[in-house]
Length: 249
Image (tube, rainbow, N blue to C red; front, side):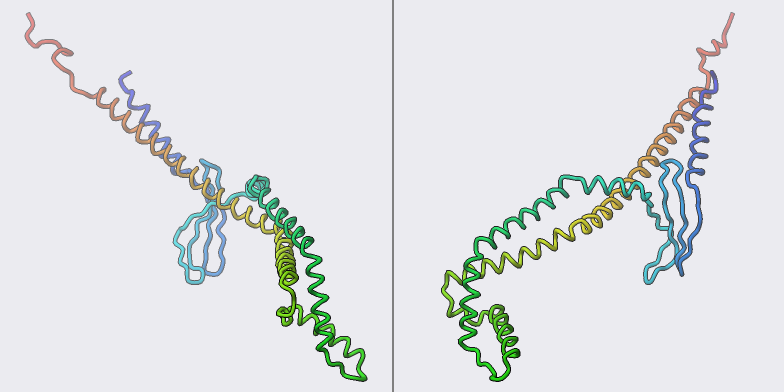
């Protein structure tokens, strides 16, 4: 076959046509000064957007970003939420809650004794207003609460009782924080998982795009080299051995 170079030439032409037909342009969306063009990469099937214009103080001139489908995001999100890391995160908070409950139970008696002693000292220093029993009762309760929060009688409380109260109060506060953290964890994990899924899918889309482009470039260069090699072998000048000697009998 004298024209083998035609095969790689046809391949090169097909590759150029495939390059020209790679992108399918969809609708154009306009938001104030921003223009968003929806695209689809026929090679990978990935949807993209190309942005032009200005949004606040940011100028866009053809920046492209992949747009993962909601099904892909939901699937990847479910995988992330079911990962061992997320399960361990829940277990860690539950272990903290269990520890704080044990601390509260261990120091409960000492804390109750602290409250009793503070109540006695408030009663000792309380000066009632005669003729106002209901008002005096309300003020007395408020005085006890303020005394417990401010710790104004701590100097008169035995050290061991005071330590029990401190440990109980710290565990009680930490328990409330852990309970809120556990209550809000499903929502926080869902938001974090969705954000992570979107970032991963966008990164994979860029990687697929680069791989597809790299394959195209490799095939195109290989076709050019093959065509050049075949052309050289086909059109090289004949030698004397091919035509025979000019001096014949």
